[in-house]
Amino acid sequence: MEKPLPTVSRARAVEPEPLPAVSVPPVADEEPPLPTDDFMPSVEIDEVVPQAAPVTDVSRLDWRELRMAVASCTACELHKTRTQTVFGVGDPDAEWMIIGEAPGADEDRQGEPFVGRAGQLLNNMLKAIGLAREQVFIANILKCRPPDNRNPRPEEVARCEAFLQRQVALVKPKIILAVGGVAAHNLLKVDTPVSRLRGRVHHYDDTPLVVTYHPAYLLRKPSEKAKSWADLQFAAAVAKGEQP
Ligand code: SF4
Image 1 (tube, rainbow, N blue to C red):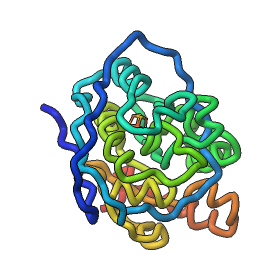
Image 2: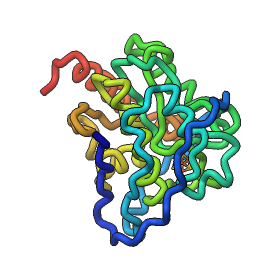
Image 3: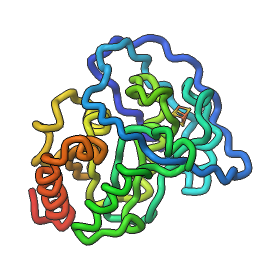
Image 4: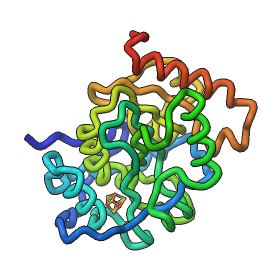
């Protein structure tokens, strides 16, 4: 059964533009690049948001089909400016899923999320709790880079969300770590500051979700690394079922 798209709240609904069909052409070995260093703590939830039109049913696609569907997606304007889609990377059976906001310039070039300095810091953060990058699955809210690293727009998030939902359904992680305000706000449909979302167990559908700072933010504000370390330890406890 098709999984309903989450409603984007606090915004006036308008008629959606017709969604381009998501076809499943021969696999294009597109490789997405690194995330940007931008830490964007808020989301433009006051904008007029079109109702999430149902993307052609992706809820039953397997990994290969889903990857092809993303690679050929033209459901929002971002397909016009991307170099390539950034599908996600990691263990398809991971216990941890790391979700950021959107590809940056490096990711757009390389076809992989969280590369560059922020990606390296994320790797080190994971290593500190005994996880290699290859042991987690890393994805973004959006699969295409917003021009000039601007915040994702609500309509873009709405049109892209089915892909992320399917990724979560396929991975079945024990814990989702939302890194940065944009990811947290769009996953949880709130605009609460990250500082107040930390330290609590939230849920994305039925999956426990913990919020922490974006590594790019930590590069700018190293004094917050201790908080992020605490968040990771908290998330590890949640993943082990040691937190309610
Ligand atoms: S951002 Fe998502 S919805 Fe928009 S074109 Fe890329 S894959 Fe499609």
